[in-house]
Length: 453
Ligand SMILES: Cc1cc2nc3c(=O)[nH]c(=O)nc-3n(C[C@H](O)[C@H](O)[C@H](O)COP(=O)(O)OP(=O)(O)OC[C@H]3O[C@@H](n4cnc5c(N)ncnc54)[C@H](O)[C@@H]3O)c2cc1C
Figure (spheres, helix red, strand yellow):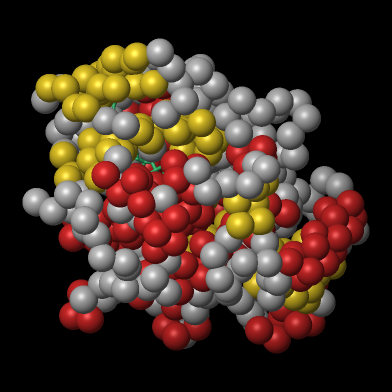
């Protein structure tokens, strides 16, 4: 297998890493976890000339990446996240170019149907608590997002009614709409990321659990796996909801990542509810910002995926099988007194025709890796100088994966300046502050992401 004597990439990105730091091309990176984060980190690091080995305890896509609603949006509250998501959206638009996918293997990685956040008028029946404040804040955030370059628009209720006549707009004060947001195809992302990484010489080992590590001074020199030892120069922890368990096994820091279960309901509207082309082009729609349940939907084939912010306790010791275990109170098959039907009731205030015409067909689930401020941990371990954590993505890991991979590669290549990372063209006027993602940050003082979903 080739071992890192790479050609500069077809896309040219990161070639400067090889030229500026020629010695790096022989260093070994072990990535733990084969979801979207691990796959895009593997491709990026292999592209940058590192010898990559990816270790996955089960099969590719064993974690949340195959259980996701997979939305992507640049409408966030923290400016660094907005910039990061602009980059991610661009990366996914240019996905096959970035990963040099053969023409006959190119499947879409993104569908840009947009994100539509609906805001209640404070006088509306059963208005969201604090509706007026939510709308005011949305306008401030939209101004920030526009300044950064997001094509977000503020819509009046009449504009919403014109574009989406099935929505009950009489209860709205307005909406924010961004046409470049949308949904992703995670299996294409991790499948193609790993294909590209292997093409560049990376080794992908499934059924290889990382169970320990041996360190010399403050550096890991060897990982212990269920298939034997692996020598390495760098380690990247891409295990998301497992990351807080994996880090201490490696001798790393305690990570404040809580595995919390989240549910996806599959709603089956009757074929007559909307014309097929209208249904297919529906945006991710968030039904009333500030509502306790945060109900939101997006089309997925003939179904609508419906999700919300459920309250479940952290499950730090969850098993792989637990990922698909739906507790009764969240399972649509156990009477109407459960979370799925609560979500439907909220959705019915805004999209009655979609709710009345169909029913819940299935409930699925997976884990969010939640951090205290809902911003991921991407950065060096506090104690081990060659261990990078890239985990704790709450409901945002698929959309984050391109920017995650970029930051991880820059950290390992030492391409940071005063704690900042400059984005590549066409975003090179932007830098990202690594402090915002530092695993050791002060969570009381950090800027919490508000629109978590
Ligand atoms: C219901 C639901 C809806 C979501 N909606 C969205 C959304 O709309 N948009 C969005 O961007 N994100 C969403 N997410 C979140 C997103 O799916 C995750 O953040 C993302 O998939 C995390 O990817 P990852 O590669 O970091 O981790 P994962 O895909 O979880 O992969 C981690 C891997 O690590 C492996 N592993 C663990 N321990 C070890 C070990 N010791 N040795 C080797 N391997 C190990 C696991 O087997 C697993 O394959 C949603 C998640 C859920 C559950």
